[in-house]
Image 1 (cartoon, rainbow, N blue to C red):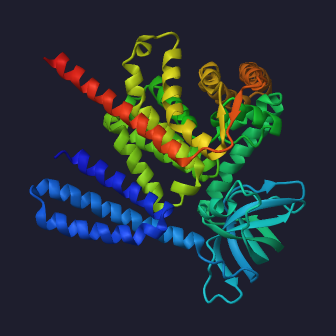
Image 2 (image 1 turned 135 degrees about the horizontal axis):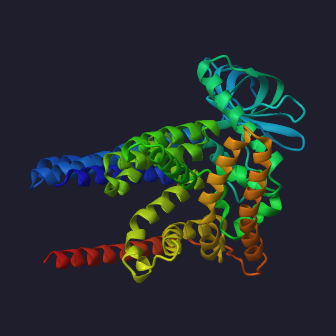
Image 3 (image 1 turned 120 degrees about the horizontal axis):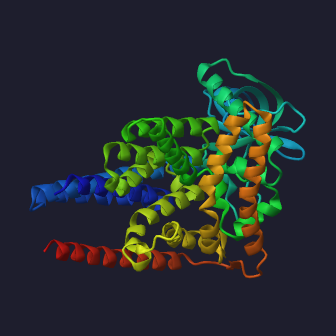
Length: 499
């Protein structure tokens, strides 16, 4: 039995076990007991040694995943016993503060604390709210806070805010009585602050050189996040299914990695050495934007793919995806249920890995018209896997998403590369910065025209009152059947060609 089968089977079983532990924790211990009995049975009665070892590995990984998921889910749902207790803590800001009309909100990683009634510090992370006119807290700044703890509450029945924050390790929030912020003297925090200042400097230069809203989109493409866009434009991007281009995703990381590989080859490096340049660039990019969870996920996938390229083993993309997902779920099992970003990112990547090769063998795969066929196939592969989940979670479907993506995606790498080049050259000459800003605005104007055109259509988005869970099972079951038939047909064609 091939070692890849052992690896993929064990990793897939571990991820499935975490899903059981998180989604149905009441069954978790029953599943663990049943798996233990099966392990003993296989160990004693397996007719073939290697097949018995394989089943042993799969069941063991399943049991481990169930246990890990159930333990983390129990932590997330545990009573907030320190609600109302007075706390004093020292920590460091995980992100830049989100500024509202009257307050700023920031996630703080707690390094030490004193909580009324607690023998040891019970806090790992805390959502701190303070007045908007206070000094703005930026990523990796040290903070000293005194406040009264409160349990996180849901503010709408349509969104489980409590578990959304629990997936980020946050169970309590507080309104600060006093807050002090300073630049942390620790080396690791200083490096983060330095890179954050570089990012803010570049964002400021973009704002001066490029007209709005193109400047907001250029910053979003490069550094991730649609919060720089107005609410009206955010809604239009959502209506056309293009929000993903300004999300910190594997797409951003892929574009950056490919650009750095080409740069390395252009300056005279071998391709394998250029991969190391791209690897360093991806890590630097993730750190510079503050290492938020989506960026870390995208970075892990990007680094995994780059290492496969370095070893010349791109055929191992599916095991690599499963391994990356297993690592992230082992660290935080709640991602599997409460982080829609993780779910969509995983499914989109899975769709491209397994569905794209089937489309490539169709007549469309033989078309080479300016790369449009490839964009259509990649977008379709991702859409097939993510559209059902989007409909289930948000009760919407962007009708024109495929067409809008085909019209916009070819320009995104161009816009990102142009933005980087303009920022670098503009650091030397203000005149070149202004001319480059005009070029960026011209390229991105097409994106806004496409978004505005399709968003204005009355049927741009279909809304569902509810999407039953069985529909998801039916859809993905059908997709799985198509994949099985397609791969079997491809295997028969391969054997026929060999003969």
